[in-house]
Amino acid sequence: MNSSNTNNGQSNNGKSSRLDGINRDLGLYFLELARLRSSAAPTEMEEDEEEAPKELNTINSSGGFLVVAPDKLSVKYTTVNLHGHDVGVVQANKPAPVKCLLYYFEIYVKDAGAKGQIAIGFTNEGFKMRRQPGWEVNSCGYHGDDGLLYRGQGKGDAFGPTYTTGDTVGGGINYASQEFFFTKNGVLVGTVCKEKEMKGRLFPTIAVHSQNEEYAFLLVHVNFGQKKFAFDLKASWFVCYFILFIFYLQIYMFDALHQEYEAQERLKRQMTIEKISLPPNISYGLVRSYLLHYGYEDTLSSFDLASKSTIPPVYVAQENGFDEQDIGYALNQRKILRQVCNCLTIHSAVL
Image (cartoon, rainbow, N blue to C red):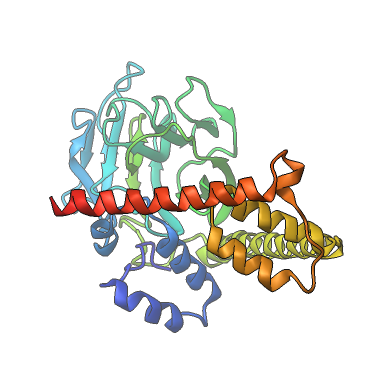
């Protein structure tokens, strides 16, 4: 299984067609759907294909304590190991890609040395290259001499078995569940939640701190997916797909249930309103009061004329202490006032 990320595509116009093309693979469908719905990264970045790590970084390493082979695929500790800070640390040449469900790499321990102080993990770009991964913030490391997991908190947590000469150990990031996971000889050792406080891109990192320690990634060669891993990633990919499927299924079901609930509530309110029976004279009185209040004399006259044969007369003016003659006079005066205001507005606009 290739650990590099899937290309995001070339244009927005092609995204829908790509979705149609991968419907046969439900996991890839939900992965693509997650990318399309995410607005966290700029479009320009989404269009670029990430470059996965391919070799060890000979520049950013604690070169005084280790030697990286010319092929940049193995490293050997060269110091006596007198102090806690004379650790040989080396990162991969690229950070772990993030536009994928899983990232994973493995190391093969050819010689664990006298003390077996070996570590595998992930560190950020600013990590101190004389410290074991997990000893500093923004790092995580699974240590071979004691089997502890370190996450930048000063002390390790019980995690898994120790590992030594002849063992193949792997480290990975599950982006779907936001977890680190580690393996030994093709078997999953355990997982741990990725700290939210971890900042920056994470680099695959190995550390050696014991004489005669010699690393080789999968029998002397780096393996970032070019060859078959000792650990079967297919099952892990299936789990990630399943997690995404459940996640989006929950969203879909929640939306559907919410829409159904709102529809039922609207129906209940509508039925409640329809059960309310208003006598014709009440609705007639409301409309007539509105026309009176806003001075719509002509509309009021037409309304009274149209309703005369079907609705009993309601004299709102009398209820307010005024007779119909006073109201009619007031309506006429307000009509004249509106006409004057309109004429003044037109006259001012012409001037």
